[in-house]
Length: 391
Image 1 (cartoon, rainbow, N blue to C red):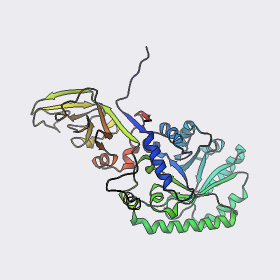
Image 2 (image 1 turned 120 degrees about the vertical axis):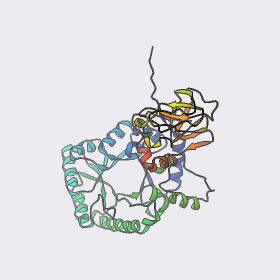
Image 3 (image 1 turned 90 degrees about the vertical axis):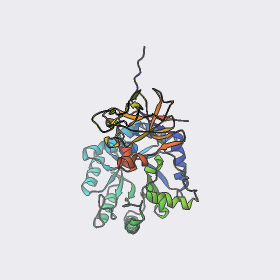
Image 4 (image 1 turned 30 degrees about the vertical axis):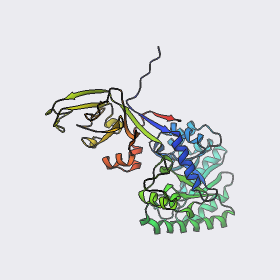
């Protein structure tokens, strides 16, 4: 007899929602802009292993990761021969040969890394597929203006070792109008670098600079490719970006063309009645003021449901909100279901997502935990199973 043991909770990925979001983003493209799906941070908590093949089925064939270890996982999970993977950040010298051998694209933003890429390509006998990151004012990584000429000339001198796939930068805060002049100045610097590259190289590779925020608010910054992250998962980079698009698309108040891909679910494992005057759970943090029906759910801070949600968080069951009562434990929470007469053991519990006519959004979950959308998503433990929902 085959044994099957299920985890206490599961994260569902809605393929239809992703398809909707990708189509929306493609419709916003200026001319023939290519979209790169950003899957760093375990695909923003959605799971690289599950999300990448699903995104491929939805038409995506370029994926951006942060590091070589993420690239290795993405490379294992890709199903299309024309799918490309690009490392935007951390790759060590001893990882370069693997990247070159496996046609992985990667950013270069230091002269010594450029030299290492040339040496590694010569050793492997295959061209390195590189993107030159330009420092334009973000002041993190990128070649400073004083080095542009040297970098472009070095690339030109090594056509057998370097295949220049792209020239790129990253805008510092396009999600807020407060940064408008800063990113405009960055864009001017990028154009300056592009002009010099054209003069030295005699051609231009793919130019890319926009994340979801710039892509959805600054069409003149689309260039040849945009790296879309948070938006493909169904979230707006900021309220400002949503309002900007709401006006340009003539949307009604509350209407949202993006659909959330992720739902986090568990179930009721036990129900019992307690008397008025009884404490619930550890210590004395919650005292029942009346007779109450409580349910336990096998979710706790080990699963990403933080202790700061003690007596403050809420979930959905039977389409109704139920508040957390008592301390959030390592593996369990207790919820008040006194007002939900039909509540039964085994009932579905939604921690993030829709149930019936109600929804616990990532934003509302984030407000309870004092975290941003991005933080809530990437902190969802990798141990929670991710499954794809196709209908």
